[in-house]
Image (tube, rainbow, N blue to C red):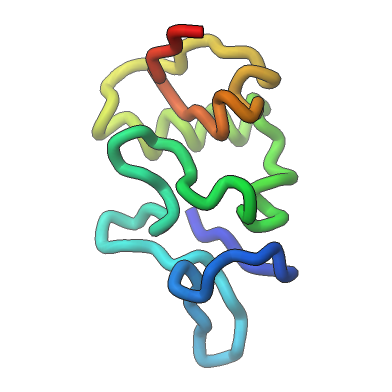
Length: 104
C-alpha cells in the first residue's frame, strides 16, 4: 500500500521518498511496508505526525479490513481480532492492526 504525502504533518524527511515527478510518499522498505510501521508491534512509530491519508483512512471500514488481512496474513496468520473502530484508532491502540494483545 502506497501512502502519498499531500501536506506537511511534520513527518521526518527520512520516512519520505520523492519520485522523479516530485510526488512524495511514505518510504517503503524491501518488504513493501511503510518504514514507519514497527514490524514487532504493527503500530506506527510516527503516529502523531502520520500523513493525512492515514488519518482519514476509514478505520474498520471494508477497505481497512481487507488491507489488514492482506498485509498482515503472512506474519499473523489469523483473522482480525474484532476491536471496535474506536479501540483501533484510540491513542492507546494507535493504529492496532491485528491480534494485538491488550491488557487494559
